[in-house]
Length: 124
Image (cartoon, rainbow, N blue to C red; front, top):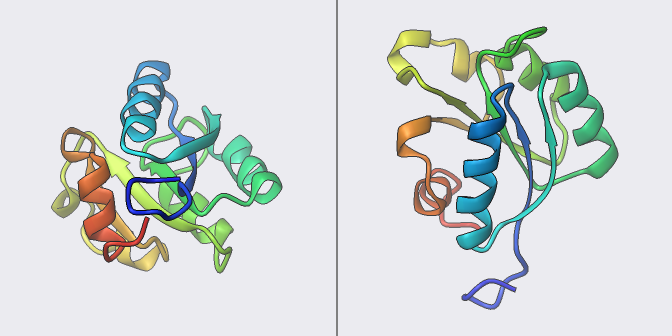
Protein backbone atom coordinates (compact mmCIF):
# COMPACT_ATOMS: atom_id res chain seq x y z
CA UNK A 1 0.00 0.00 0.00
CA UNK A 2 1.20 3.48 -0.78
CA UNK A 3 0.88 6.43 1.59
CA UNK A 4 -2.38 7.44 -0.06
CA UNK A 5 -4.03 4.08 0.64
CA UNK A 6 -3.79 2.81 -2.94
CA UNK A 7 -1.97 -0.37 -3.80
CA UNK A 8 1.57 0.15 -5.07
CA UNK A 9 1.76 0.40 -8.82
CA UNK A 10 3.60 -2.53 -10.44
CA UNK A 11 6.56 -1.65 -12.67
CA UNK A 12 8.88 -3.39 -15.14
CA UNK A 13 12.15 -1.59 -15.94
CA UNK A 14 13.65 -2.17 -19.41
CA UNK A 15 17.15 -0.71 -19.71
CA UNK A 16 20.50 -2.13 -20.86
CA UNK A 17 22.48 -0.43 -18.07
CA UNK A 18 22.47 -2.49 -14.83
CA UNK A 19 23.42 0.56 -12.74
CA UNK A 20 20.45 2.55 -14.02
CA UNK A 21 18.09 -0.39 -13.42
CA UNK A 22 19.38 -0.74 -9.86
CA UNK A 23 19.12 2.96 -9.05
CA UNK A 24 15.68 3.29 -10.71
CA UNK A 25 14.45 0.23 -8.79
CA UNK A 26 15.70 1.61 -5.47
CA UNK A 27 14.22 5.06 -6.08
CA UNK A 28 10.85 3.73 -7.29
CA UNK A 29 10.54 1.28 -4.40
CA UNK A 30 11.29 4.08 -1.92
CA UNK A 31 8.52 6.08 -3.63
CA UNK A 32 6.02 3.24 -3.10
CA UNK A 33 6.17 1.50 -6.49
CA UNK A 34 6.47 -2.31 -6.71
CA UNK A 35 9.19 -3.23 -9.26
CA UNK A 36 8.20 -6.73 -10.40
CA UNK A 37 10.80 -7.28 -13.12
CA UNK A 38 13.76 -5.99 -15.13
CA UNK A 39 15.00 -6.63 -18.65
CA UNK A 40 18.25 -5.62 -20.38
CA UNK A 41 16.97 -5.55 -23.98
CA UNK A 42 13.80 -4.91 -25.94
CA UNK A 43 12.90 -8.49 -26.85
CA UNK A 44 13.22 -9.67 -23.25
CA UNK A 45 11.30 -6.59 -22.15
CA UNK A 46 8.35 -7.38 -24.43
CA UNK A 47 8.25 -10.98 -23.17
CA UNK A 48 8.50 -9.89 -19.53
CA UNK A 49 5.72 -7.32 -19.86
CA UNK A 50 3.44 -9.82 -21.60
CA UNK A 51 4.11 -12.39 -18.87
CA UNK A 52 3.98 -10.15 -15.77
CA UNK A 53 1.34 -7.63 -16.96
CA UNK A 54 2.68 -4.67 -14.95
CA UNK A 55 0.77 -1.41 -14.69
CA UNK A 56 3.80 0.64 -15.74
CA UNK A 57 6.81 0.02 -18.01
CA UNK A 58 9.86 2.25 -17.62
CA UNK A 59 11.48 1.87 -21.04
CA UNK A 60 14.88 3.12 -22.20
CA UNK A 61 14.88 4.61 -25.69
CA UNK A 62 18.30 3.11 -26.60
CA UNK A 63 18.44 -0.66 -26.28
CA UNK A 64 20.91 -3.07 -27.92
CA UNK A 65 18.37 -4.95 -30.07
CA UNK A 66 15.29 -2.75 -30.58
CA UNK A 67 14.66 0.92 -29.96
CA UNK A 68 12.40 1.79 -27.06
CA UNK A 69 10.05 3.30 -29.63
CA UNK A 70 9.74 -0.09 -31.36
CA UNK A 71 9.21 -1.88 -28.03
CA UNK A 72 6.45 0.61 -27.14
CA UNK A 73 4.77 -0.05 -30.51
CA UNK A 74 5.01 -3.83 -29.97
CA UNK A 75 3.43 -3.52 -26.55
CA UNK A 76 0.69 -1.55 -28.27
CA UNK A 77 -2.58 -1.39 -26.44
CA UNK A 78 -1.43 -3.46 -23.45
CA UNK A 79 -2.83 -2.46 -20.09
CA UNK A 80 0.56 -1.03 -19.09
CA UNK A 81 1.39 2.66 -19.24
CA UNK A 82 4.71 2.97 -21.07
CA UNK A 83 7.05 5.79 -20.03
CA UNK A 84 10.14 6.29 -22.16
CA UNK A 85 13.39 7.33 -20.49
CA UNK A 86 16.71 8.48 -21.93
CA UNK A 87 19.87 10.28 -20.94
CA UNK A 88 19.00 12.66 -23.81
CA UNK A 89 16.15 15.19 -23.74
CA UNK A 90 12.77 14.68 -25.40
CA UNK A 91 13.33 17.27 -28.19
CA UNK A 92 16.27 15.15 -29.42
CA UNK A 93 13.76 12.52 -30.55
CA UNK A 94 11.27 14.78 -32.33
CA UNK A 95 7.82 13.21 -32.60
CA UNK A 96 9.03 9.60 -32.21
CA UNK A 97 7.90 9.42 -28.56
CA UNK A 98 4.36 10.49 -29.44
CA UNK A 99 4.18 8.16 -32.43
CA UNK A 100 5.33 5.16 -30.37
CA UNK A 101 2.14 5.10 -28.33
CA UNK A 102 4.03 5.67 -25.07
CA UNK A 103 2.26 7.64 -22.35
CA UNK A 104 5.17 10.06 -22.14
CA UNK A 105 8.89 10.72 -21.77
CA UNK A 106 11.10 11.60 -18.81
CA UNK A 107 14.83 12.36 -19.02
CA UNK A 108 16.74 9.94 -16.76
CA UNK A 109 18.16 12.77 -14.65
CA UNK A 110 14.59 14.01 -13.97
CA UNK A 111 13.14 10.60 -13.06
CA UNK A 112 11.36 10.46 -9.71
CA UNK A 113 8.17 9.10 -8.25
CA UNK A 114 6.78 12.63 -8.43
CA UNK A 115 7.70 13.10 -12.12
CA UNK A 116 6.05 9.76 -12.94
CA UNK A 117 2.92 10.63 -10.94
CA UNK A 118 2.68 14.01 -12.70
CA UNK A 119 3.10 12.41 -16.12
CA UNK A 120 0.48 9.78 -15.34
CA UNK A 121 -2.00 12.35 -14.07
CA UNK A 122 -1.45 11.85 -10.37
CA UNK A 123 -2.29 8.12 -10.56
CA UNK A 124 -0.23 5.73 -8.47
